Image 1 (spheres, rainbow, N blue to C red):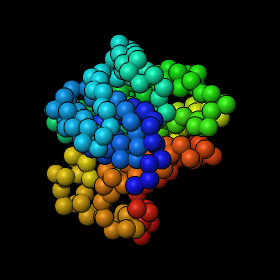
Image 2 (cartoon, one colour; image 1 turned 90 degrees about the vertical axis):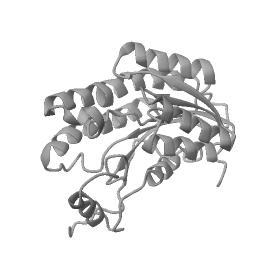
Image 3 (cartoon, rainbow, N blue to C red; image 1 turned 90 degrees about the horizontal axis):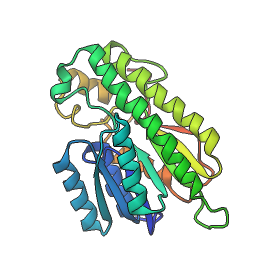
Image 4 (cartoon, rainbow, N blue to C red; image 1 turned 135 degrees about the horizontal axis):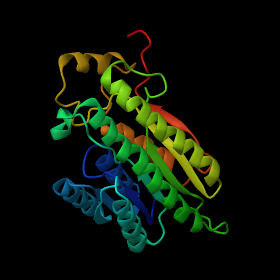
Length: 262
């Protein structure tokens, strides 16, 4: 693998499992030297991510923080910049899981509120401060180019999907994607901001779902399969690659090509 991120630092929120972990590992394999592994409560999962990074040769810094709370956001920002100094890559992956575990039993309003607190308010308020810090560190005389911030959206947010899931995740992820595009307008050329919009990705929910959802996930992709967390990590690396200095304010769908014949 090319060491495009050689001797750089990164932060990946929500990197104790799933897409976040795969992204953190891919960044380390690409040359990131030090990486903040953020988690809220999955300490064991964060430790597994940290072990994987250490095996690659990347120095992990574990930070626990609830991004729905002001003190949690401030704790992550302080720990990240105090530990790393300069941050070249920031990936906003953290999101509330309302499909598995105890949260799955919540009613629609409870799930929507949890998603809004973490995915929208948490991401926006965190990113505004982080972007200011990353922009301030930009040196126009340097050969390293602008830093990069990447968000995780959803490929069906703009067109909509039926059911409670569509009515929850659609507006939530649409808000995240709109904010990312607006932040990009204020950040260039000192900071690049892009969004990766996954399609059907086999995370913890996808591993235990019904035959219907399995057939739908495979049928709605032109590639005829579920996406994997590595597919999203690969796209994040593309968007964050220090060499991609002309790529910003973009939303890149990673869904295997949406099958209009389904």
